[in-house]
Length: 47
Image 1 (cartoon, rainbow, N blue to C red):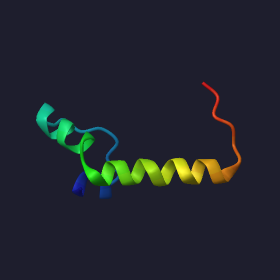
Image 2: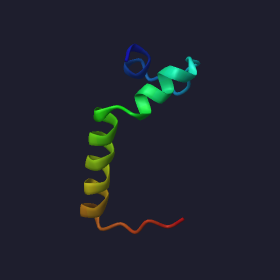
Image 3: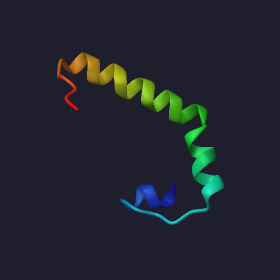
Image 4: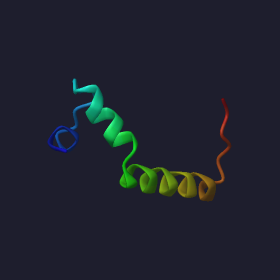
């Protein structure tokens, strides 16, 4: 959390920590909110 607040773009962390962040309810909530906002923006997703 401190690194993110300081604006750090890259961190080194244990693999298990990354997996726990990926499988966290707040990650799911953040992704859901992002996708809603993207849909509301009217922008197209181009791969």
